[in-house]
Amino acid sequence: MQVNNHSVYSYAAGAVKSSGKDMAAGRDEAKGKEATPAVGQAEQGYANYTKNGLYQNAAQDETTFPIFNIMSKMEKYQKVLWEHYSKVNEENVRFKDPEQHIHDKYFNKKSPYYVKGLTQMERQICERAELDVLKGVPPALDSDDPVIQEHFGGCNIFIMDMEWNQEVRGQMDDAIRQAFEENGIVIPDGADLKLTVDPYGYQIHASGVDEGLARRIENALNHGKNGYYLYQHITSSNPANYNAKEQPIQYLKGDKEKMVLWHFVNRLTGYDMRELEYRDGKYYTPDGENLWGVLKDEFGKLVEAGREDAAVLGTYRMIYDRIAKEGWGYGTDCDLSIGYKEGSLYDLDTSYGYGPGQTEWQDRVRNWYAGVEAKYVRERAETLEREENTPSPLEIAAQETEEKMEEMYGKGSPWAELKRLFWLGQTTTPDPAVVQKLWQQALEKSKLVFLTDEIIDIRGEHRKVQGFDQRA
Image 1 (cartoon, rainbow, N blue to C red):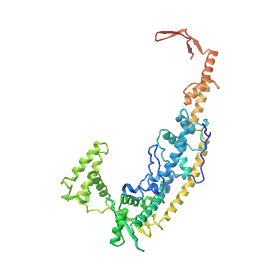
Image 2 (cartoon, helix red, strand yellow):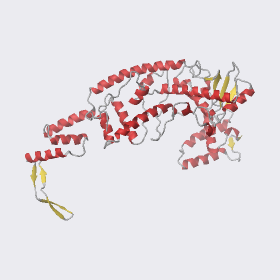
Image 3 (spheres, rainbow, N blue to C red):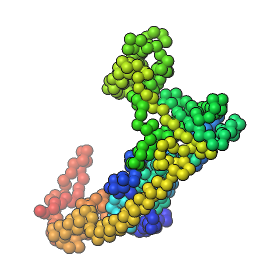
Image 4 (cartoon, rainbow, N blue to C red):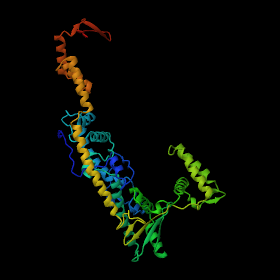
């Protein structure tokens, strides 16, 4: 088995990450939520982070728009992590005790496989990742992981979201241009096409062109889940995600509870709530049943099957009662729109967008992150130097234990050495050579006293042995 002793993790000048406090410090330019790392099956194959990876098979449901899948944001990171730690795991499993080897590799400086050049936090991350892969679980994505640092310079949530949205936008533009070309659709010069997606059936509606062309555009785009993916992409493009000074009104308006209730009803019954009979503050199914009674029964089945929490029904009931009292037409809908001009989508009422001429703000975010990177490099170097010159808790315990053993049994005593190893958990089986030395030492110093020649009766058989006792 060939293993490089004393492996060293090296960092390129730009290999850095954004810590939680750094992210908070930069919220004047960027704002977002921490993503929860994806964990799939150990044998999962990661799709390419490209057009092929983002598109569905058109033969399945005729969807041609990029798939909105939050896991795609982390796909390229997970792929690199899995490839690295899977290869490391091939070496780990060659050891008799892989778990102990992994621990020693990161925390036992006397191990010939000890990895240099890592902070204590990085050691914990690497150990956890290798133990996960050893158990068949993909490693969690952590921006402090040395593998992520080396390949990507960290995994900052703001940069990740921004670049992912920009990539999806490019794929969305390609899909729309292709749909127009296949259907012989030509947008007139100077036309300012607007695509609006309703939050219920996710149908795409076109405006800004004549009615005939608008219907052709809608027929060309409304296939499969195109509307859903376009709606989710517009949602993820909200400038508020980066604490922009401006926020388009479309993200603020609309009765979101109506949207929640519509999908709740549709999921349980298949009905479109907008089309149901409404009278005297109640909704009725086509069979004349009270809608809420049907919802309650269907939800109860899910609770019995362990697929829903019974307590959640109360929240839906409050929403239902309010909307039933006011009527469906009382509040506005959460429609979302996006512009299309000269072959590209562009965001409405904002300069914090992903369309042509709207991406200058992204350079400001990158400049902010460059400052975070520089700060991280400095702080990491300081942390590493401090930790390398400060004994770890394990080293302190080892030193104290060794001093205690020497005080009790004498310096260089094999008994002290054996006790020390047991105390530190570095051995569970005594070395025969050490035991032999202990036996000889005990005899020479009269630490053993023979008691009798016959001391044990095992299963009725008498065995003659020399017994001994150890003096206090």
